[in-house]
Image 1 (cartoon, each protein chain N blue to C red):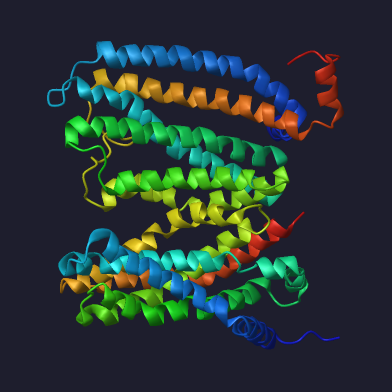
Image 2 (image 1 turned 90 degrees about the vertical axis):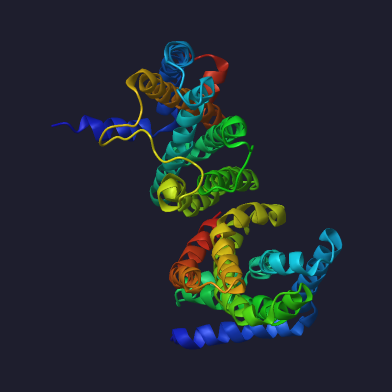
Length: 228
Length: 253
């Protein structure tokens, strides 16, 4: 039997993952609700002073988004590893890196995109100025795929481990520091009316590198983790 | 022809040979570390003159700076052996990488604590979000992540291989720590000791520092070899040479 083309395999996998996510729509809403609830805790914890809230809004949004992505990442490969479809993907004639890249893309669409949609609302609840909102959305658009790719590599590593939830946080959060620095840096520069192109360019450069290396590293990590 | 070097290295990578070799080297390395460390401490704490600005408080550098070097050096060793272990599947390289991680984490912690103790009188704060401090803290977290991932697996070798991969990913942080004082102009001072060109330090202060550096390297070797020996015994517990060792039929190395 001739194997199907790589692009049709990728499209099929993407379709399958999106369909699976759609059948469990409740799971998609969870990270969003989590982000909204964590975001609303801040005004209670530090007081409803608008100036203070506006100053920390971008940081709160980024950290909250990061934590919700972390929560949703945990199950990225678990279902596939448990029901054996991961082995099928690894045995497939198509390159594993591309297939895994499709899974990461599907994860980004289902987990990160809803977060980006609600982020402006969350930010304006924290008195974030509307003038800087496009920069916030742009920074999120660049940084969330970066977090998804980085996280996917680590999830792949932790895939075979017991109690992987906390472990994932311990591994992922230190590596996310540069992403948070540049993303929050760009937004706070825009908030103060300063040029924000430089940190944004750094984010874009990081994303370009991660798009190339992330799926390859993720495939290598999966091969190590599944190798028993 | 000098092909005994690769032959010897090849033989050394067998757990049994390495176990004996490490057992022979360890006491010497430990003794050297203690003697050199004592001399360096005496030189640093008593012989070296007080700093004209910082007084005696600067003397913490004789602990702080060698530990900081070691925190990066051990990460380097861990990365290289993790790479070797992943590519050529050498069991010993995996063990060396995994047993390096706790030692490196300890040196990183010492660096952070001594730096913090020094920072209180000098900078007026225990901690500041300076580039070097932050990247060193991230280094500690990466070490802890590697250790945590290694222990999260039932199968030791799978854990070692997985954590080795994490160590390779985390290696991007090492140049950031090293160059952070050049890239960002924050509070932590730049490099004082240079391999190339003159150092910004008097020779009366430099020799204890360099001696301490050698002492910490020796300590690392001693500590690593002890840990690797214990790990090899545990991993190879079913093998004949370990049984011989346990029964005392073989001469103790």
